Image 1 (spheres, rainbow, N blue to C red):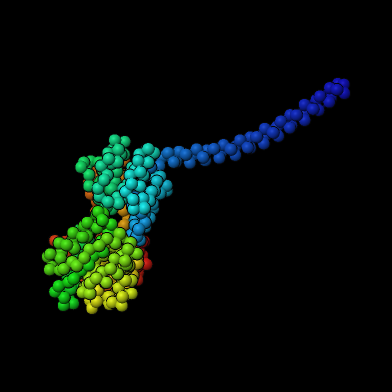
Image 2: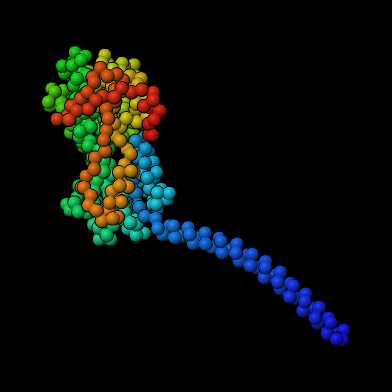
Amino acid sequence: MDKSGKKRKKWVEILVVAGSICLAVLAGIGVANDDKILKDVGKDEQKENLISVGFSQVGAESGWRTGNSVSIKDAFSAKNGYALIFKDAQQQQEQQIKSIRSFIQQGVNYIILAPVVETGWDTVLKEAKDAHIPVIIADRKVKVKDESLYTTWVGADFYQEGIKACNWLNKYAKKNGKKRLNIVQIQGTQGATAQLGRTKALEDSAKEYGWTILDQKNGEFTQAKGQEVMEMYLAQYDDIDVVYCDNDNEALGAITAIKNADKKLGPEGISVVSFDASEEGLQAVKNGEIAVDVECNPDFGSEIVKIIKRLKYGRSVDKEYYITDKVFAKTKEIPSIEAGKLKWDVVQVTEDIIKKRRY
């Protein structure tokens, strides 16, 4: 072989070796990329397999509402097989309607609505029904001409909560030698189911027990507004026995106003009745600042998951699901209360109960 032939052979050998190295490197890169692609595809497939849920929340006006949001987020996590789209309406119905229409456009599998007020939902719920998306109402109720526009409702019996509080209050008044009571009410957001139910319970009980309702004003379920309303009451009335607050935040605001006015809390001054039984509320019960606190359990998430599973597998669901609630007081001097044929034990607040509170 001549010199030129040897050179060609040498270059061929070099190219073969170089080509082998490149192929090996490329193969390695290809494997790495394939692994990444497979992982990404797996993520996409996993997303596709998730059940999509749109949730329109009222807002974050109270500790109870925050606890309710946490319950929904925990229950509808990706780990549990759900893709949750969470929208905070900031107390505005128009924002909720906008969110529901967005959920419909995105083609979610289910919609959960915690409505600001009861009315004004017919049109947008009809749109969800036409899109074949089941709507679950949570907490407050809706009033619509056609109840088939929503699938079911999950929440508390707000009227019964009010009856529980008033039954306890009647026994408490008698125990402290008070036959008649002068009551002011700090109401929640006007038109909200909780406000309507708890107000009706107070008004019915006032007629039954001979109490006088001096005034009723909107505290918007917030601490600041609760304090503001209570300050107005204290300036206007000097014979208040009880302030009946539609939630703990309003009650805490009322307590601040009472203390700032150098008024006493309790049977010798002004007794505070409240609802929700949040961590702060229960601490106020333990401190003797709130006389009775009727629980409104915000843990709806697990119950709604059960409902969606039933719907997914074509099983029937009830039109209403009620969450169970307890009654809390500082002591067990009033051991139990009644509402119709039903009876509940009163729970004495302890530090352990407060520590275990999720909201």
